Length: 109
Image (tube, rainbow, N blue to C red; front, side):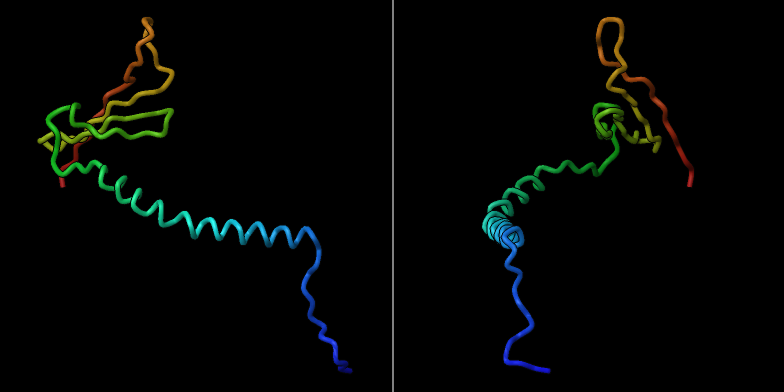
């Protein structure tokens, strides 16, 4: 049976109201801040290093790693892939950080 009253109502719980305000505030801040970071992203991308040729030796290597294990990777003109592998806790007796290996690989097509 229909009466003149609507059965829909807004949640008047204070916690729900506070969450809505918080979400709206965060969305508003995000809309304001995004245009500020767009030029910064372009500046960072312009500093990317791109290797477009092979290297003669390890001085032209590309660093790779995750903070614990690292590698310097390069391809010499003969097509061999070389790696210097390092570990953050591989120290010499003098306290010098060492590379723990230099494997290489080559493949013929």
